[in-house]
Length: 189
Ligand SMILES: Cc1cc2nc3c(=O)[nH]c(=O)nc-3n(C[C@H](O)[C@H](O)[C@H](O)COP(=O)(O)O)c2cc1C
Image (cartoon, rainbow, N blue to C red; front, top):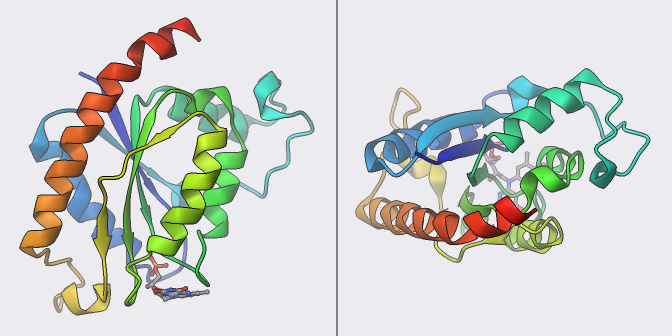
C-alpha cells in the first residue's frame, strides 16, 4: 500500500488547518487507497532553512533536517492542507519545501485549500510553481473551500458539503493513479 502524507501548512494558534486536516485525514483513511500519515508542520517545527549545502547534495548537518528528510522520503504522495496568507502560500510551507530536494521527486501532490472567497486557490497556484521545480507532480483535482468559517460547527469541527466530498474522492482517486504511474521514475532515480 502506498503511503500518503498529509502536510498541515499552518502553525497559527487557533488555526483552521486542524479541523480541515482532520476531515481530509478521515476521508483519506476511508478511501483506502493509501496508508495515511499526517505531517503537521507546527509539530515538526523546522527553523528557517539553515543548511549550508544545497539540499540536492543531501549533506545535511542538522538532526531536524535528517528527521524531515526521513518523513518525506517515506511518503509516496502528498496532500497539502493550506490556507492563503496575503494571496500566497504560508511561509512555513515554502520553508518546509525548500529544506529538501530528492525526497520530493516524482511524487504526486494535491491541495486542500481554504479561505474567504478565493478558497485559498492563490496560495495553491503559488505552491504549484514551486513544487514543479522539485519534480513533484501537482494534480489539478483539489478541494477548494471558500468561506471555510461558515463550515465550522460549535465544536470547531468541519462540516463538509457534497461538493467537498465529491472533490475529495476525485482528488484521492487521481492521486492513486498518478502515484502508480510515477513509480518507475522514482525507482530509476
Ligand atoms: C497573515 C494573514 C493573511 C491572510 N490572507 C488571506 C488571504 O490572502 N486570503 C484569504 O482568503 N484569507 C486570508 N487570511 C484569512 C485566513 O483565511 C484565515 O485567517 C484562516 O483561518 C487561516 O488559516 P489558519 O487558521 O489555518 O492559519 C489571512 C490570514 C492571516 C493571518
